[in-house]
Image 1 (spheres, rainbow, N blue to C red):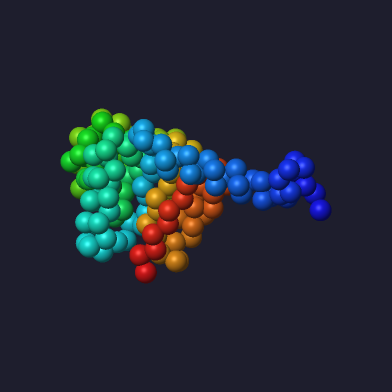
Image 2 (cartoon, rainbow, N blue to C red; image 1 turned 45 degrees about the vertical axis):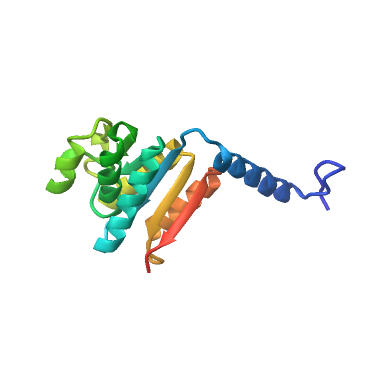
Amino acid sequence: MEQVGSATGLKSNETLSVDTFLSELQLIQEKSAKKIALIGSRHISYTHQQLIEMLAYALALVDNNIITSGSSGTNFAVAKGVQRANPKNLTVILPQTLEQQNSESRELLSSLPIVKEHPERKNMTLNQAGELCYMEVVDECQQLICFLYHTSTTLKETINYAHEQHKIVTPFYLD
């Protein structure tokens, strides 16, 4: 049995789990603002949209920096909630360009102070650009909150990526 440290008696993969747990605990206990990513499905009910908007509003109200992506559904609800609380605490990372968003999203996004576009992805499919976008969102945050369905392949892959990056991950399954 491979052991790390004579006093601990833990295997190396157990040490990683303990280290991960301790870093997550420290993040949770910190009273300072955090960088929290809120992303999720484009296809959500009106009730889910209201709940996500309220959560985003509350997180921004206590000075957390919120990161999301563009498009409709979850990300739109996040942007609306943070915009009401404190728009300077919101960063929106688009998978492609502002022009490629639907008109309702474009209107909201054009009023926000920090919107990052990726014109170099303009010719990619939305799924391809979305995967890259979600990786960038995860790289920017300390904690990921994700609203998804059990069939949401890209979002599940994003959650796995966030775990690999040792982020705090909170998935909310909508089904």
